Image (cartoon, rainbow, N blue to C red; front, side, top):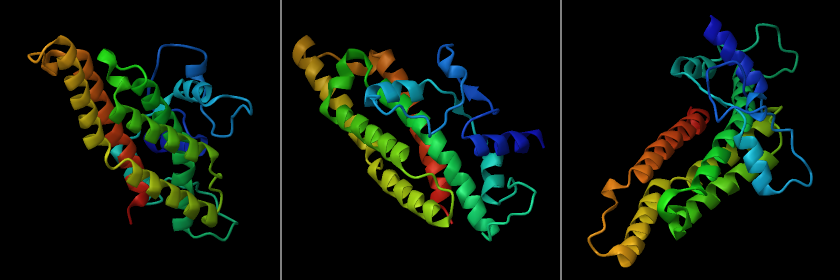
Length: 222
């Protein structure tokens, strides 16, 4: 099907011809992201901004299931001696190595630009540091081209999955910290319930988090 062909292309390139969410139009946003493109002297902030500008691949549930079943593997014979299962896992790992940094980088950028000073709360800074650490670890990891490399990458994903497990509670703590700060500044009756920009950010952030954890959990599953 056309969807299967598009998903196969995205897996091979780590981005590609599926539907995408775009940042404001720019030349960088139109380029496909490659995990191999790193400028030696580039700062982390510059690298985050650059990777965040690349297009994010939208993945359907059907394509995810078909990939897990090995239905989107190339039709030609494989001469590496690897089993179909191993080839499928490497295919998934290759896609995740290229896709996850884009999603992680975007969250880091967002977490630095929050309204009402939420980005300066200690708990929010802690969450941002988790995303930065995970971004760096994936970017600096070896490309999973064989079974050994895939196993190492899978272990990395497991560690990242565990690191981000407390994100919901920690972000809620950050909102509480902001509320306490603003009440001290504006009076005890101040309420964040009408702070639409904060609620809008949290809704978007949590939806993105679900997407990232589904992608990692798809590899973590049996």
